[in-house]
Image 1 (cartoon, rainbow, N blue to C red):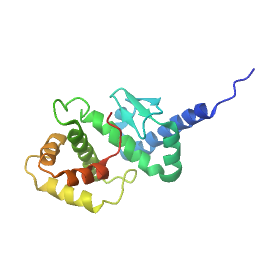
Image 2: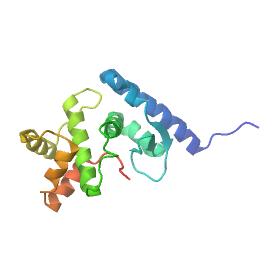
Image 3: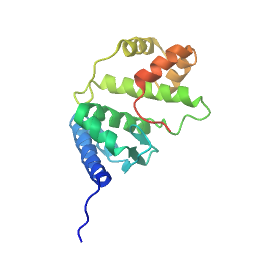
Image 4: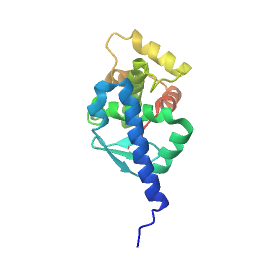
Length: 175
């Protein structure tokens, strides 16, 4: 008797196709990252709301991936690249004893700043006022731009501003 594909199996199969499409879209703009685009093994995961990685696997909720692909496919390019850059910048491994929430925000800002600076069609988006203002603060610094530098900046911010930055730059799941 032939196996009848379940909804979950179909969603997982389609998700792999979506991820392949996203990698190809990014490859056209960022050929130098070809090896990085292949480094994570895709793994469907139900209990998350966006992409996540442990440095070896790329976890994703299949239903969410398909929904986003239907409604805003270019966003997936950005989320995927965001997650890859966390690995390339070693953000998963160098947080050490820093405040986990602040470190996550700092890493997200560093990655988003990089993506926005690339100015590529596959990942381009309008910059919000919050991004513009924070990027201007970053560019005025003389100690470079990295997650560690941004983390030190965040230590000086009030909780309200930290919450706004967290909402603005949140992209992938850091759990």
